[in-house]
Picture 1 (cartoon, rainbow, N blue to C red):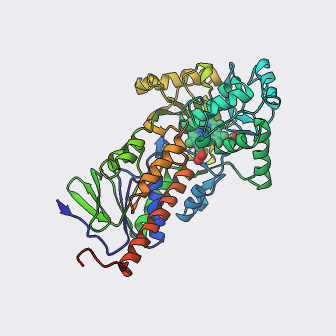
Picture 2 (picture 1 turned 90 degrees about the horizontal axis):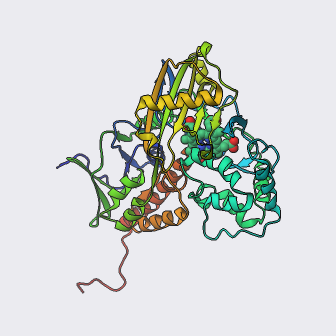
Picture 3 (picture 1 turned 90 degrees about the vertical axis):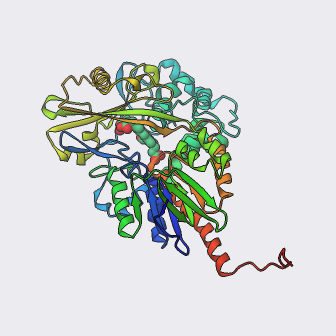
Amino acid sequence: MREVQDRASTGHVVVIGAGIAGLAAAHRLLERGTRVTVLEASDRVGGKLLPGEIAGARVDLGAESLLARRPEAVALAREVGLADRLQPPATATASLWTRGALRPMPQGHVMGVPGTAAALSGVLSDEGLARIERDAELPRTEVGDDVAVGEYVAERLGREVVDRLVDPLLGGVYAGDAYRISMRSAVPQLFEAARAHTSLMEGVREIQAKAAAARQTGPVFMGIQGGVGTLPLAVAESVRARGGEILTGTPVTELRRTPADGGWRIVSGVHVWHADAVIVAVPAPAAAALLRTDSPGAAAELGAVEYASMALVTLAYRRAEAALPEGSGFLVPPVDGRTIKAATFASQKWGWIADEDPDLLVLRTSVGRYGETEILRRDDAELVDVSRHDLRAATGLDAAPVASLVTRWDDGLPQYPVGHHARVARVRELVAGLPGLAVCGAPYDGVGVPACIASAYAAVDQIHGDLRGVQELTAHPVQSLHGGAGE
Ligand SMILES: CC1=C(CCC(=O)O)c2cc3nc(cc4[nH]c(cc5[nH]c(cc1n2)c(C)c5CCC(=O)O)c(CCC(=O)O)c4C)C(CCC(=O)O)=C3C
């Protein structure tokens, strides 16, 4: 084996994984003057963020929007020079394709849970609407340590709210199933509301009042001209400009603690690195494989995290031949029995995509939910066909696309079932027992881009505490008060 890098006296951190979490961690470490090497198994940086092109126009082929209600993603974009390219969606209205028609997505909900029954007619049946009102009279529903979102909301407001509003939204966010997903991990503000209020709709109205008081009135989401997929590229460029090293095509095959010096040994094929600390920023199965030797307990917990797969079908049409309803797109409740779970009208949602080629209309559909594996076994041409079929039924769009592109995200989205927070706490506790090791990314504190970045910064803070400990120990060795063993 060849030692490709010597260990610096202090403060060399290896980050494993160059998705947005690993890159954000590297960026933050360099700001604090730490030497950084990022090792990425695949041949590119960016993970679930992937810029691409269809019919000559730039588009996102992965995540295409950043939540702007929390600061981390937008702030990172600004830090790496993308301030001028941040762009809010051109339209803030979306639809639900349910009960045979596209219907406006009701305003004022928290992950599909309404604050009032107003504006839900059409989306819900008359019985469904009547059932919602019982929320005000029903006795308290205990949530305990955690509860499935669907179970709790169905008990308070009836199954129709879950099936037609909550499930399609969670289907977008997690590609998951409302009756399995943890309310505590996936929608923490609803969990808090459920603890504080007997009536769920009262809790939702309080969340909305607080948001209004905090003047959270800017756009909920932000895009980036050229694609959200350009964010990791800009972060990587900034990491390199600050002297950080990023190596793609470098799968880590072994991660071991070196007890003699409290550091870490990282192996990729014939290459070996020695670092003071390691940040593991890869999906749960890969993290499990890396931690198997030094923390079999954490590896077992991470190995049990399940993933859902999905595919995105991007379609481009001549604008003169195609027209779409207004808005950014639509979500499809699973109970409606369609194949696609969402459609995003990309060139209506993002001004920058419309500007790429004004004669082009670009949209994308998504298929695949947790446990739904049959649909993803179909080949690309079939996924294009089912997408066109559903789009025609929903919107009347009948034209032939001039280009189509299928992007598969196998095991793309970690699932947060009931009890996920407890699993993450156990992983964190086990990892904390190994100084100089931290984990971050989508399996832990949220699957969205800002949540991934926040988990990266938390990992950096943890590592920094550990590194300071090592430096202080080296500078001021602890004097034994009892004399040594050889006395
Ligand atoms: C990861 C993630 C988050 C978490 C972000 C974070 O926590 O950081 C999130 C949040 C949300 N998504 C929301 C709404 C929608 N999501 C859609 C579609 C999709 N979301 C997806 C993922 C996510 N979604 C995916 C994989 C799709 C499939 C289509 C595609 O990938 O192209 C669509 C249909 C298409 C369109 O109209 O654009 C709508 C209307 C609202 C509610 C907004 C409100 O309050 O109004 C919220 C909070």
